[in-house]
Every structure is written in C-alpha cells, then in structure tokens.
Length: 166
Image 1 (cartoon, rainbow, N blue to C red):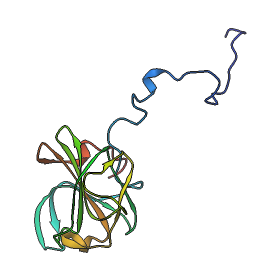
Image 2 (cartoon, helix red, strand yellow; image 1 turned 120 degrees about the horizontal axis):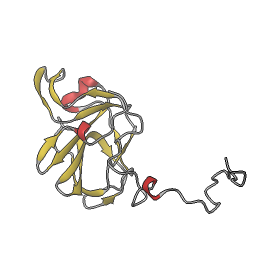
Image 3 (cartoon, helix red, strand yellow; image 1 turned 180 degrees about the vertical axis):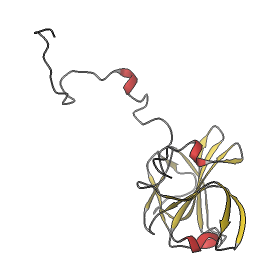
Image 4 (cartoon, rainbow, N blue to C red; image 1 turned 30 degrees about the horizontal axis):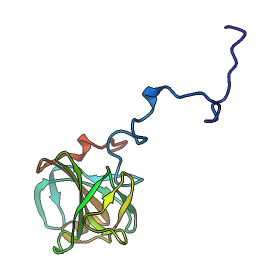
C-alpha cells in the first residue's frame, strides 16, 4: 500500500463526496415505502377466506397487522383524491393519486387531523392512523387494508413494495 494514503473518517463535512450512483436523484429513496413503520402481513393479495363475511373472494389488497392508533404513511407523494366514510363495511378509506395512473388506497383508518381531499402529501407523511377493528374484515382485528390501483385495475402491492418478511 502507498505510504502517502491517509484514511479520514467520513464525518459528512470533510469535503469527501459520496459517489453519485449512491445518491437518490431527488433526495428520496427510489420506489414506494411501506405504509407502516413496522410491517407484518396478515392477508396477501389474491384468493382469500373472509372470516367476518364467512365467504371466499378475491382480496384486492394486502392486510398489515397493526394496533389501533398506529401511524399510516403515504407510500409515495401524491394528492388526496378521496376520503370515503359513507360505507360502514369499508370503514374510512383514503385514496391518494400518485399520477401516471397509479393510486394507493388505505382502508380501516382514521384520517390525520386536517387532511382533506385535494391536499398534496409527501412520501412518508402521516396521512392516517389505524382504526379499531371494524367493517367487513373486523374479525381480523385492527389492521391496515392497503391496495394499489394501476390504470383502474387492482395490482398486487407486493409487486411495488419491498417486503422484508411475509
């Protein structure tokens, strides 16, 4: 090894620049983040038995186990398209439009104080909290029902989210 090399710890302020390929273009990690800080999947996308309704059907999203009051995060930046509360079976449902035909849906939640239709939200912003178990999946306990819709068609959220565990 050359005797003139000096190793300087990177304190973030020593003039050393990180290689450009390691930096996100816009200061954010690429891709969607998880809608909860701690994730445990209870029901996947696809054919599923609903114990509350006592029937099988195509589950259009993923369910994440979470205690009531757990913060729900916007998976990507976008605009709040709707906050739907009119159907007791759905509980409260928030839809965020991310553009390019992509929308995320968060069900069985309580919207964050002051959140309203038309608001711009940032990736990682708290948009809701998980509600007490209610609606058409109440026998599954408190949880977040999360869906992704691309060009009007539900897609498996696992194709866009990075799941550490299933």
